[in-house]
Length: 296
Image 1 (cartoon, helix red, strand yellow):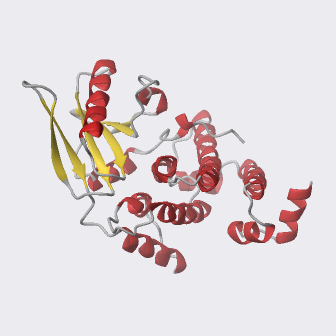
Image 2 (cartoon, helix red, strand yellow):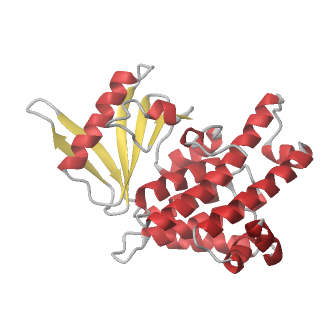
Image 3 (spheres, one colour):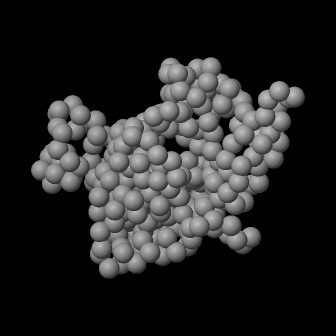
């Protein structure tokens, strides 16, 4: 299996899924394209925004923030916009919006100098209930109801939608990762954007190194499988939908890849400190098989 690299984060994300994200952000655009890592790393020493989406009339930078914005952040945001504007390959204006777990929606005005004021929007998601969204998806899974792309994208952002002082964002992110892994068993290629968003949230907000590395490994392994599927599909020149491709295409290779990926997951989880019994429950795999893989 291909080792996960960060430039896989948003490759092959469907425009339909990007439109769902724009709906959440209350943005409209006939076309939308997410910049992948090689485009986002315009200046690796100082510059690595979370997400950039090229829309009809703007290049929109999106930043995830867990503390209230201040002048220091505004200076960084202004730098992001300036560098993107300098390096962009189109003639569209550059804007930035901040998705915040710490404050409600508002506009920020930062005075650069006497002649210039830098303005950007903070999106607080105050009209959403992250806990309710997570519970809703868990209930749909329990009752074996269809989980749509819209469901999974809202789910991936749910950890950012609770501003209670006792909100444990790391715990919510872990909970969402567990649900996404379960969704991946149902529809292995239907959650590209959701996995990419959650990878960013893990990387940015999970402070416990052991938990962070574990979640990144699990997400990375799943995203590698998704990426490989997309590459094989492209090479074959297939234009069928994901569902048809899963049902009819490369049955033997898919089974072998799934088995190989599960073995890698078992080893990584064991090395991170999980007991074989815990791994068995998490991956729904026979305990004796897990012990055999660990001891081989």
